[in-house]
Image (cartoon, rainbow, N blue to C red; front, side, top):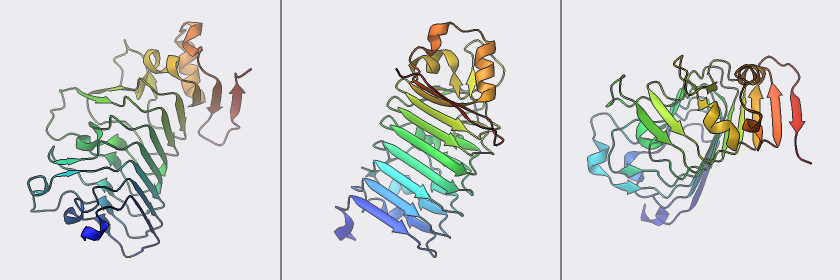
Amino acid sequence: MNSFSMLKELTIKKCDLLLNIFPPFLLGVFQRLEKLIVADCASLEEVFQIQVQGLDIEETYEVSSQLREVNLVRLPKLKHVWTNYREGNISFENLQIVSILECWSLKSLFPFSIAKDLQQLERLAIDKCGLEEIVSKNAEVSNEQEIWLAFNQLSFLLLGHLPYLTCFYPGMHRTTWPTLKKLRIYNCGRIKIFGHEESQIGQSLFLIEKVIPQLEEVSLRLRDIAMISDAQFEADLFYNIKFLRISCDFNVPTIFLNFLP
């Protein structure tokens, strides 16, 4: 196994009998891995099997992964990218790019224990998946306790064709996106995209006042545009937007507006 310890990039395709890729004892072996591509594996259920029933992995392994990019494509039975686990000795804090496409059995992407350390994440794209939430609940936090999630380097976010997505995190939380420039959201009919700082009705993905002014490219649903317009914000709220795509969720023609000179 030591022969794989220097491996930087791994591509796995059409391995239909594979159930998981990284069982616990391999996490340390591949800790120098920087790029992972997995596609068209019909039976795959887990990518990183961090937790096994009856075994406390955190006490057994200490891994600081160098993984920077993860691409998962057409994995119909994928249930977990990372199995949930308590805070411990396993870190994926170097992740910069995560792309998930056509994984309809996947209900949640990041365990809270992974998401809280994604300070280097720059691009997140999720399209045509069965996600109900982006980050799963932290079992060690009560429903009344608010948690913070900071995505300080994220500049590109795409959420597309996620018909079951209802929330970012299923509990009280706040998120920060100080470098977000490109936002593309379409065919995500159940999630509330925008809210106001003073609003107490439901929890939205973004606060209009915090995110809209910094965006340069944005793709939104028609109802989001209507909600923003009804709120009567100052005109300079949209000052930096150079490209605007407006779409409906039911195959209605899309409107493109380009503000570049």
